[in-house]
Length: 358
Image 1 (cartoon, rainbow, N blue to C red):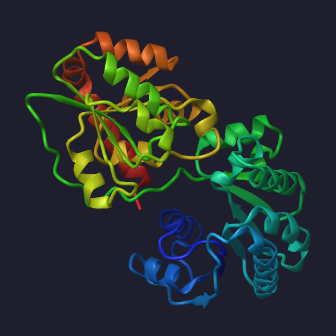
Image 2 (cartoon, rainbow, N blue to C red; image 1 turned 180 degrees about the vertical axis):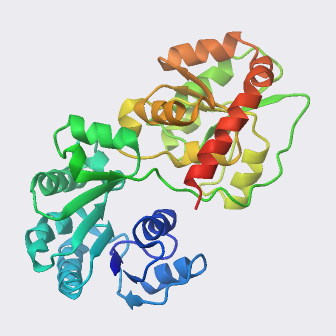
């Protein structure tokens, strides 16, 4: 028997990852799923869960609530450890860093093999935007460094595993790698504009993601066939003064999934300007969106993209830096390149989809 526990998310939060963990650890056998009622309801729409335990999850706790959040989940996890004594495996599909740090000292309560799924919180150890995230990163690092028996961590990509090993936080034998899962179904029919080549950046727009480089590229472009679009919300208000009439974007702060998918279906190529630090510890939903619609990728190289290109074959082109990418787009015939390479790129997209779809 396997026990899977989601202590942080409600509704469809972590849905794809939790489905993947059920598939990876409980395929063909009975399991118990512990989570918030709306989370279990969302999972039940995809897979039948006959053994379930409901818990209350406080999602997006306010700062003053954090001590109570930690204490509450600490005792939930202690209860689950005791309940799992007669079971083979217990999988924590997510843990808050402070709770992770504290409860690991009590893992001796259960002899079951234990697994903890690591998400984007890994980034907080070295890359953080405020004092609270810095503190949480310190707790997470100390949690990783505290060694106990019968425990392995699940990381969502080979590049993440390599990064964690290079930092000496964990050793290879302490980790299980499961490529980040994704729902590649329900794709809209592609729409081709014979008059233009539509180049887009995908997902929320910000300086961290290099969207300002894309905006600058659109301003310098002299190719009348090339059209530029930001497909996603403007997450950083500081980008707004840089925008101009040579680039299409959503003015709303929230982009509906229907509008987002419709824009993807009309896109010919996707540009990614992120550097190494942005994807050293986490997967890219925007890249997986490009895979879903088989949109050729033109990206600044990093370990995340290199991993996919090495494992499945090229699905576009990688560049040493954003200047090289920009120069290529300003001076090369993108339409001819896509026509020349598209058959092999489409075949490699199919490989990614076949092996990682939920």
